Image (cartoon, rainbow over all chains, first blue to last red; front, top):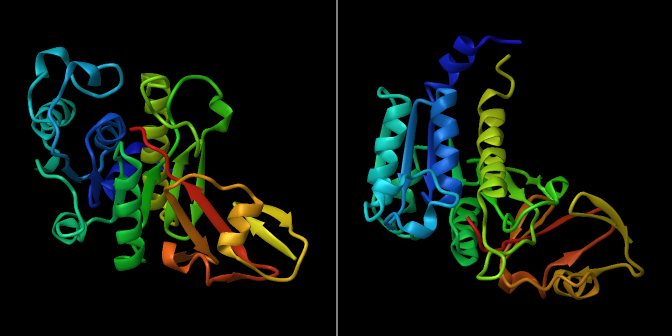
Length: 196
Length: 67
């Protein structure tokens, strides 16, 4: 088994795209930066609000800030030398090429199911060789054993596939963190496959 | 016929079914789905016309909101 410097030497050469900087994207980004991934490209149009703090990697004094700006601050506190490309825009079919075509792996980290479907379909259609790590089903608490990764070719979907978030079944920190880190771990597995 | 449905072996009585028929038989009700047949993406408009045969590997993945 390799030591951390050997792992980091490989990861430092990699670029990961993250679509969405909410509960999934912000926490996944933190784990990837801690692991030594060289460059992150992150896109999100939203601003930090009080209701995000139950699960997203932001702080109370960042309420009102544009998420990608706040996230840049927080990630640079982990690693001041990380290369971060942040875009305060809504990801849409007409900007996916511009945003993510240089990425080794793309992480789907949206909240809304139709946006998840849009990105997954776009990548599978236009970049069939590029791995995409998505998430579906993470609201509520408990049933940890139902969280898993379903794989189909270059598509990986993390979560339980059915716990939809809503007013009466809100997403909470533990499961959101677990699923965002299932995503980060799958990214590492893809990047380190056949390297050791 | 015997197929792999979401990584589990499933036996469905009959020889050939469309993806739409399998969704009814297996009660897939969510609106947002990713469907892959033998790792090929199947678009919504192809659910009716794409046929699943013995030995096929079918994945019907629910996409639900939350993140």
